[in-house]
Length: 288
Length: 348
Image (cartoon, rainbow over all chains, first blue to last red):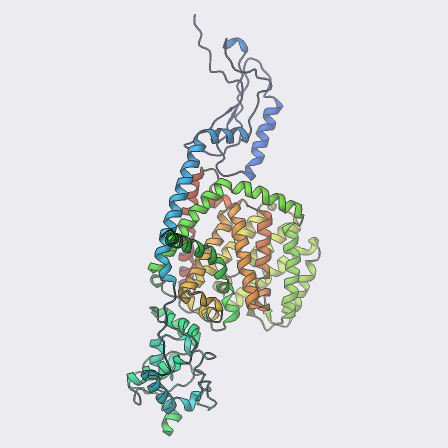
């Protein structure tokens, strides 16, 4: 009568399933057979050590299953399995070694390839995106250009009275607050070109119902669009290149919400007033 | 020819390496240096924020992050072992650093009457500075530090009542530091293993929220950026702010989802905040003191259990790296939805 010997694993086995590699450091210690005593203390210690290491587990720790099965030596004659005593090893080191030699090595190769591909793509994307991060050079406003010279004349005639000949702001008491400086100590450079244009053309009176906002008068009747652009060019020509770069960024497709923020940021917005409610003439304009 | 190809490849790489340092000015807290912010105002439209440039930057940062996740899994643990050894030799427990730091911070607040926790939060109550000084005194001993923690909770609640929840979501870090110190002071055994996670989680939440703010209210940062010479590095000012938002978001995520890279992200953020202090002075130093110390504590204490939620350490290298990336995108989506959704809910 032939007797098939059972699979004999005299040492604790480390079960690594690469498909679902989970850290389950609980040792499944089979009940000993053939009247053997309970699993030796070293097994229990190893299981406890693995359980304790769960809180300090590392990446890629495999599923570790400690199986302690022992069969009497006579059951599998000729087996080369090592004797039970002294062979209880169930540590993470075994598992890691198994990972390194098997599925782990393939995973590492795959990970390195992934990394190389991702890095190459990142370089390619950065080449594409880099031009979009560069500052768009703001238009230059040379003091000798026709537009700036025309703007200087317009400024002297219509603006200097309130904002000062040197753009440093006025002291004249309007009905609300003194006119702000138009050079970089003010906030004109924190507005988009479109907002600045509307400010000059339609004024800031009655804006958002904010009675503390500076009462910039409307110049729609005094200045044509070309003159308004000229006076803005003159003001910008007095700003440093860095400030013009920042101001130019406000022209970068502001959404309505952003314009509201801009209004809050600078405490003024210039929406065209309703035709039926023209703003009161500014004292300075009225005097002219 | 070779020089040209080197330039093509090298420039973006160098640019990426320089980004954290260039981003420093944008990390000065905008509300401390610009009074004209308005939390209840509409943020920039979402479809305006998510433009082509934003999507390209997201792709770039995601790819770089994927590389970082792989490297972190390949050799992060060895690097962590080395840092753990160094931290052990240093012999200064991170909780002590935070306790003493909190005391110094509260004394600084007492010296600036009218300030409630951070420079932009103001209070007219004359008792608050003295309350903060009393709290500072309680940090002298671990036995009484929990009182300081309770006091921080109270001050945070006061600030929420005064400024609204949305504004105070800028500062969950105070919640985290108070909780962290309370756990260490009272020593409940069941909560002690999670104190570090609480700290890392709230620091990351603070930075993630701030990065969203840079995209939603980029105009607030504009004056701050304009006053800084970094603008001369050739960045478009708005792109610079958007880029700073990405740097902050991804570094904050790495605090949560990195092992060695969590520490590395904390170190880079530390450099950024210290650089901002050098540029912006005393207000920035006091305002950022607690986050700077929290980052030091994060570097010293190393990975925390909260990281497992984002890294899934049981997975293999490649699978795990992709899952970390997926979690990053999930966090980004959740935060964007949360930021704009909550704003709409609270302010319409």
